Length: 241
Image (cartoon, rainbow, N blue to C red; front, side, top):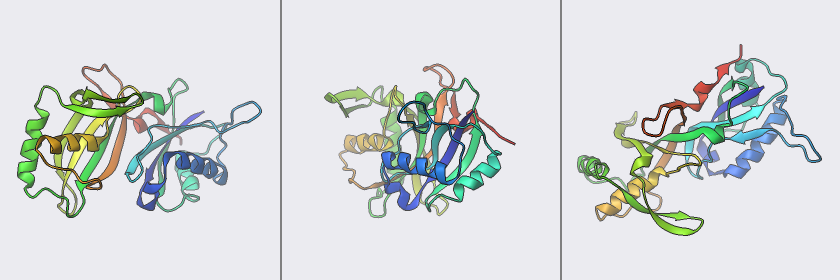
């Protein structure tokens, strides 16, 4: 049986890298006595795959890990069982059964939502001017940036990878930016790269630690590239009663 687990990664856990999180969840499965399936052969390992690695220092309430189990309790009880053995900063949000034909989360990721805000002391002096300029920046036919690849640096057009960008306000009234960008193996755009390109276009410099990032959701694309139909990975499964 295929299971998709959605979890949050916040607080001090945002400084734990992806490989360490993979090892951590393997231990969690054992401690929570999840009847997870193991591979065959001389060195069996848990059948487990993560959707999209999260950068160090980024918080999230939309992390996904797929597992296969031999048996399971209800979604409600499994969420509680796993949360009981988790450390502070990690919380399971849902535990859903996937169709037998479902592809692994990591292979279907197409986009992700982020909330970005500036650290205190790095905010624009005039927010209205900042967002007016940002709107003009996005109206360009192309947005060219230098992107590092395994073969070096090359200039690419990131505009097709920006699906949504808008002004928002937090609960305490602070200005922040909501953005949806391409994610996954086909195309992957770091949200901070968009703001960096915009700042440089206006002759401004973005400080190395100026932005705070939070991932809000991760999506699969259920349609074509020209008119994408984004579906949260969580909605591809169903609760177990």
